Length: 313
Image (tube, rainbow, N blue to C red; front, side, top):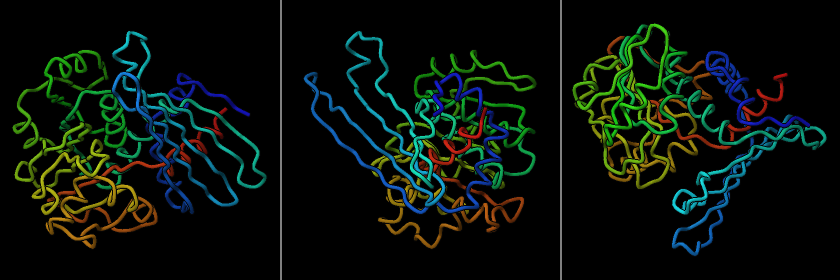
């Protein structure tokens, strides 16, 4: 059985090849995927969580990401992060445990590569400017994944509600041939951007549909709950809509679920998911078409990445 720590996971999963592998993996279905969430009060007043995200390709492989969320870790002086995770994979033919790997590293890589996959299929063919909205742990990985998907990118601007975090991230990234800078003008940069990627905890839109220029590609990552959203309904109405999976992105994420509830869009407006795109469904169909890819995540992606890692030596 293989044991891969975070360093080994990051070393194995370079974005150009990971994106290509994910596209190939989406040509095959995942038969079962679920999520199980348990919680208990913490003496600090916070709520602690234990999550299991299992997925199964029958006769091939099964995996589960096990996650704990203890918010008080970041406040009690322990020096521990609030989130810990491992991914465990089993052989799908005889049930043998095959691999245990660092789940936090897998989450960063698979989430960013999911968006990179969306950009490789849907973004304009030769974009030059990218706007990264958010400067948290996902942001540098999303930047690297989009650069892998669209190597023509030459300028990345970073906006964050806390300008200091955007400036720190811009200063920390040194990518050959890429100009990276922080910005306080989110509207101006959004209007100029060929690709916009959002990874925030916003519950009110940070991107307005009126800002999107013809031919732009909007990548939404952060809104993983029904009360969260990173763009307004106008953006959904202006864009050709695509999702990574219909079960997570449509039902659980706020932009789409809120817009559907309000009648701004219908489920039939979603043109395709990543499985359908990988199998040949039409993506971008014109130079001026504005595309939107909702990255909802899910245990099926952890399974796919675990299968990719299992073949790494």
